[in-house]
Amino acid sequence: MLDIHLIRKDQESLANAIAVRGDRPDFSKVLELDEKRRQHIASSESMRQELNAASKAIGLKKRDGEDASAEMEATHNIKAKIAVEADSLASIETELQDKLLRFPNCPLKDVPAGADEASNVEVGKWGSVPQFDFTPKAHDDLGKALGVMDSEAGVALAKSRFTLLRSGGGSPRAGSHQLHAQQPRREGLRRGFTALHGQLKNPHRNGPTAQILRRSLSPRGRRPLLDPNG
Image: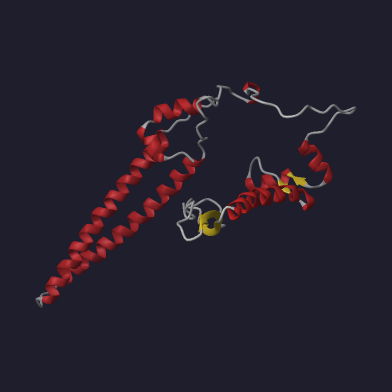
């Protein structure tokens, strides 16, 4: 996801970088939401200062045996305004996050410009392309024929470009994930590091609710090599 601070700082350069992918983004709406968000934050902070001042005045009047009903009424009204401001801020932040998630990431500077895959540049090849005496099928056609890939159900769940893997279809992916998780772990343990497991909650309100476990390695008796919360 693009950083709103980066968009705010230099939207033109960022738009030019993403335009290499064939689509120039329009940041006007996210900048408008960002400005509203900062205004609501400033307003909330100002009201909290008023609330603190009113609360202090209540304490002083009660200490001196004076009537503090006016100040207590003021604190009640300020708290109600702060609650309304918090609801507005939450709504704006949700919309802002949703807009930011729709922008593609910036490509590296050496990525050639192009509108689609036809503009891709081959930078390397491993092995030789096998030759068949028949017309090979695409992997998604094979997966559907074997009953291990279900794109229709995936689209129904995620709305676009998502495929459910059924039965044995999920085994290769699970094995790949396990391989990528275990290789650095074994190497780290061999070199005297200790594996740490920390919980990282997704900060996006509309994102997955599941918690993500981030594995990190740290030297025994020292601080983590990777921040488990970062």
